[in-house]
Image (cartoon, rainbow, N blue to C red; front, top):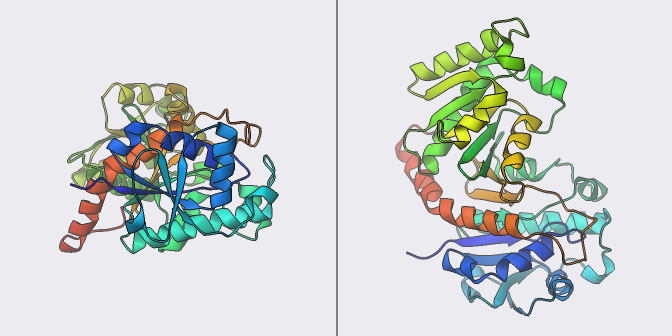
Length: 345
């Protein structure tokens, strides 16, 4: 069986994206599990090689089928859409934001045409996007718009811990308003389907509590009784192995130790803190529900480190590894979906 082709859009070239990409591709083990293909701009890759001191050759191609996919060579689809030497390290710039958008757009088109199997993305910068007139607030929203996917699922994975998010980039007050029985039920259905697509046949899902100690039967808030418990009960009637709500100060620990296959976190920081405290550099973001699987480093452009060659590439390596690991089962699940009563994963 051929190893999956993993597209790696370079992201914001004023940040560390190009550096962590070339440092990850310098590791021979990556080529044992994947066929990595960079989508970006040649000058940005050469600059990253210069600042990291890596002795890798560059192989520009027009199509994925022309790539060598062997260690020591970086296969690159060069969009030639930005003068990398004019982009300053460590600053949000419209030129870098526009180029990052175009890298992603081209990578998505290749995925949708079946030319590459999955994406492993490097960081983008929201201010640079805004300066370039791009309104998408992040990768997930952009990928949803480009593929016509409403509300893609976000899953974080680190070690044995997997965490879904009921909401992402909204205020804490706004996130609490989204804790409704209908939304939680919908997410439990979609999370179960997504885990099945990743190769877990009967996933066990736990729902994190919202209030301290899970509300203590209404003493510290009643969202658990009013919204979460009815949603979980309804999910169980549909055959979903869901449990909770379980107090957030313990549920992630139990999941890390194998009690559950995944946890549904109720807001952004609840799940982010839990995963990143396990291992910051190995926490990987996975976007599900798209026509392809996408993984990503879970850190930003790190403008303070850009151009120094000192960024840690471990997250990039892990993102490519997970994309390659999950791509076959995810694609197989998508191919089976027309024969079943599927819904958005």
